[in-house]
Structure formats: structure tokens, C-alpha cells
Length: 489
Image (cartoon, rainbow, N blue to C red; front, side, top):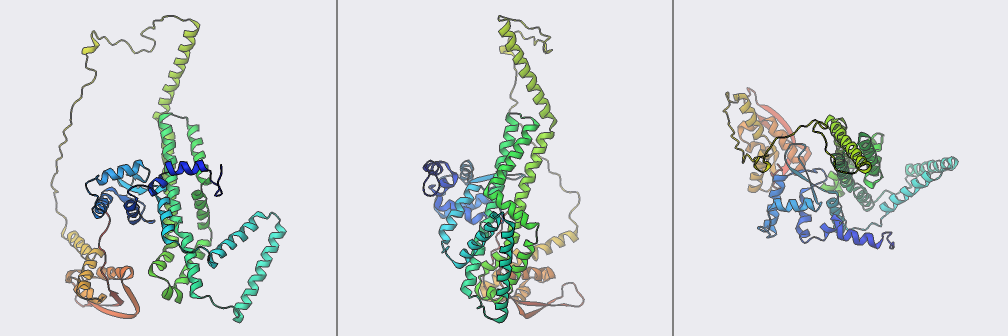
């Protein structure tokens, strides 16, 4: 019986009892498991290494005072069984984890609850009106009517152009701009998760087809039918439809137009005065994030196709299938023989050309013996030649001018004083590392964690191993907070 929401009561009851998303939202440990997933699995980094994630779980267990109940490895094993985590070791040969589509859905639900907000706004109604207008054009088969609607749009745009040129149209307020920005970020925020759910669907269906091929031994035609069928099923999912639409957009000029419009928005006073750093970063990286998500889905399709090709071209599969077919024919012939001429029969030893195994007492014949635990001895031979001095110097210079090393210098200075300039950080760097690489790292860290004032400048001198010191002019760089130098393995 369907409810007013268009869902049957049986479907609701089944989802609450069996669906991994509902189980995660109602789990006893949800108060720390969901924040753990949200903190360490981002939309840009889908996979994390198992060793690193086990350390984060141990830290969380210590923070919530649950250490000793179970190990991080046991928790991960339970989460894999519950379909909250998935594993893989194809890229590096080392175990790694990623969230399943069910966990992503749970996090999206929690995010909607936390962010809340009023969905009734002029920007939201404008998006609805634009979608309804486009749907009206799509559903009307009358070409003359479509031409009339385009003419009306042209006339309306011409009137609007004249009004803007004459100054009769008021400028948008910052509140209206903020509403439109929120609408853009809300519409695009869920797309990476949708694409990741599509990647999970691709892998799930891939594994289903592979298991059937290994267990049932279908013919090549069956495998091809399975592939095409699963491909069509993916296209019918909401994530698959979003993927097709986005991929189609990438082949048009729409992507270039979006990049141009985003650059235009970020160049305006509204971006500098009313947008937060997080909003500017989301808007600037929006298209790149979506492109990376689309690429991961495409990689899943390629892995799926390559795996199917291995099944179809595996010569052993054909031999096994032929043996199974011969066995089926033999069993069928034997059943017909027994039905037509019932009674005991003795087959000649030469029928299958196997021969007779002459054993007097089978109970005393060792068919198989366990060799016991195998011993493995690893010999490590020392390198015949040491690393050249030039290579050692290059490695030392690379480490001394790395973001981690420069950030440590900045953090030490920030602990001593509130504000630290780029020139001061460079002067505090050991003389052997006062190179161009350190300046480039300073610029990168200032863009990501500090402040860059292009209207002012700083001058530093580089005189390491140079006859004449090199004078470098930089924008004014300021650091007012510590920089996290931690990283994932």
C-alpha cells in the first residue's frame, strides 16, 4: 500500500531493517563512526591507506574512551561486512579503504540535517522556473510553438538589454548574490558523492558478473549479454543519468563558459568582501572537482571492461567449458542407457583410458602429506656502491625546502610572535636551504594558509654558492597561524 510519499509501507519497513544506510544511521556507535567517516573521507580523496586509517580509528577510540573493546582492524572488518566500507589493493598492492555508496548516502543525509537552511528563496525558485521552462520546451512537439517561445525569449532579452543600458534596472543586493551563491554550491555539492556512488555501482555489478563467470561458467555470449545489461542498468540509475549529462556537457562549450563565469565572479568585489575563503575555494575548484569525479567513474568503467576482456580471452575457460559439456553428455547418455536397459553393468578400464591404480590396502596409502610450516630465509646484500654525493646533496636540499620543513620554521616563528612575514621566514631558514625552492614553497604555503598582498613587496637575497647575491622581489606574505604539517601515508 503506497503512502502519501509514494513509498509502500513494506518498502519503508524493509529499508529500516535491512538497508546499510539506515543501519549506519541507527547504529550504536554512530555518534563517533559517522564523524570519523566525514573527517577522513573527502570528496577529492576517495581511498585512504589501511595503516593510516587504523591509526585514525585508534585515536578516535582513545578520544571517546572506547579503547580495548576491539582493535581498529576488527572494526574495519565489521564495517566491510556491514557494507559501510569497501577495500581494494589494485593500485599499489597495499590494502586501502573507501566508503560505500550506502555510507555516502548516510553522510549526505546528516549534512542536510546539520546545514538546514531555507530552501524557499528567489534563487531556488529561479532554478525551478528555469527547469520547468526547459521541460516545457522539451515536451512540446510543435516546432512552430518552440520557435514562438524562442522569439519571446529574444524579445524579452532585448527589452532587458535596453533597460540595463538605460540604467532602469537596479543592481542585485549582496543578500541576493549570497542566495544565488548558496544555490550554486548546494546544487554542485552532492555531485561528487553521486559520481562516487556510481563508481561503487560499477564495481558491485562488475563483481557480480565475475562471480557468475567463475561459478557457473557461462558462454562468451552470456558474458556479453551480462555486460550490456548491467551497462543499461547503470544508465537507468539517477547517478548514471547525472554522469551521462555531465559527460555530455564536457564535450560542449558549456564547460569553458562555466570557467569564464567563475573567473568573472572571483574578480568582483562581492567575492572579496562577502564570500568566505571556503566559498571562494569551493567555487574556484568546483569544475576541477567534478572533472576528477568523472575521471574516477571512467576509470571504473575501463577496469570493468578490461576484466571482462580477460574472461573472454582466457583460453583455459574454453577448455574447462568443453570438459563440463563432455561430462554433461556422458551423464545424459548414461541416464538413457540405464532407462532402456536397467541392471548392473561393468565398464571396461579402457573406456576413459585412465587405467587401474594397483593398491592392495588403500587405508595404508598416504594420498597426501602435510609438509608443515615452510621456512623462508631472506638474505640482504649490501649495496656495492654508495649514493653519489651530488644525489645526496639534492635529496637533502629537497627535504630542507619541502612544505613540511618550511612550515616547521613558520610555526616556530608564529609561536614566538603573532605575525610572521615571508622575508622573516626566509631569513630564519638555514643558510644552506635559502634557495629558490624555499621561496616557491613559501608562496604556496601563503596562498593556502596565510595572506598574500600583491600591492606590497618584500626583497630577499640569495647568496648560497653564488659570486654575486641574487636579489628576489616577492609579494608581501603574512602568516598569522600555525600550519598543520601532518599528512597521510
